[in-house]
Length: 391
Length: 192
Image (cartoon, rainbow over all chains, first blue to last red; front, top):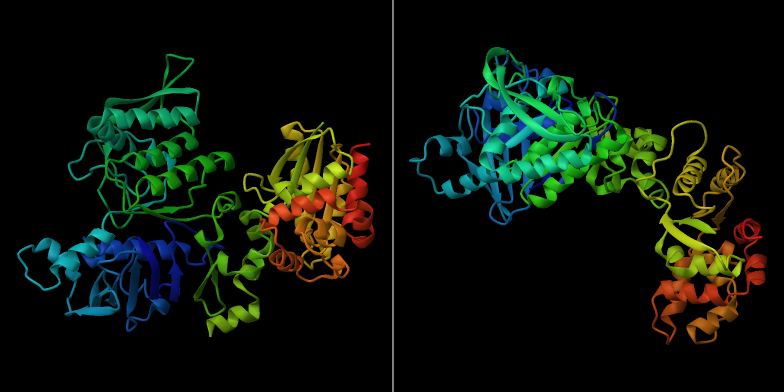
């Protein structure tokens, strides 16, 4: 588990440090750096099994991801682990001036109290090099393998019900995984069904418990779509091919309801359940605004699924963003970090358990109520305090 | 008569508040307890200050649970605006559910210090008269210190439960005129 994240010069994250919990939520106004934190976490994790220019997700070129667009500034990302063998890992990278290019400036891992710096590499991390060149001999091979084990397999979702509903063509590269927008759900369910019927039945049982009007899930052969796998640009180009479509059998009717006609809430809950019932759940699950399209009471179901994921899969960590006070209600103060933007444009982070104005009201109010009634500024500290923190 | 009792902490909800309610006339009532910060109960958005909205939300919750009355008690914790907000909820007319709402000054623990005879009886040694409870800055700490001197070796919640069974209600009303006295009046009215 990543217990602390330190970032310098990535977008508006000029210099931040966040203590993370097994399930952690980021709150704050729009444009306060929440998504940037997920992006940089994803980049660090992906750097262990992707080329660096593919590790940083989204559409970008040149120095667009660097603080103030300054190409001279190195972007540093570091994680501390809750682990005995390797206690930390970090990279510092330099972005190119025009194209989608990024190079390593430095890389290190930590064991106990000592920091071991690795020789300079160019376009990829030594952790990735060790993966692609298993014959490569280094005194640190064992530790680098362990770093990869701690960071690989990140899933990053901003689920869109329209994509969740699409029929999906099989793809040898797509294995037990949806795209970030949710494309691939039907195939993912079909893979879980083929892998372990009992697991699929449990998933179906959980869904029908939440939505009692649904009797079962059906996956039917039909004309479907094919899309690029793990596209870092997050752009989905769809081509037609044969594949599987997702349907729901209702309790009081013989009619099958196609996923395209099912409610957004049903599809979103099903998507999160699918992650919960993966044979190998992700090590790090990043989720943007799970409340979108969800009734506040249904949101509770989704957050319970995510908590179950963390409890049942001890190696899985979940970090999510939200604008919903109803979601914040379900977290402890130490599990919530508020992001705010200072006047100079940089981001400040405040863990709610460190905010006196939160702690003094916790006996009476829910956390979401405190957040909405106090406001971001008061929780983050007075304006004067906030400015001083910025300095 | 079913009564939902909503308060802040373990000391109120571990027998002490229930004993006080019984002493105030609720001998035949059955109680259901909940923490006021229960995170499944999210206050409605809209007009009004925080404590008012939270208390009104509990009135609605009490109605949904089908109880006959709501007792709600919070601590003042040095923030006097809470008294007015809870008073507004006590007078809130859009729901008719009988209710007794109060604000303990500065906190519930202060009520445990009002009657030195009850303290002496429960703690098993002679306890002197304490300063006016509503002026004590940290009554929880004072209670803990008195308990430390006691040969009784009981948890603080048991001390509170014992005192609330033994305390002289008139003395408590006299010595806590801002918090306990109005609360006691509302509670007595509930059970008339």
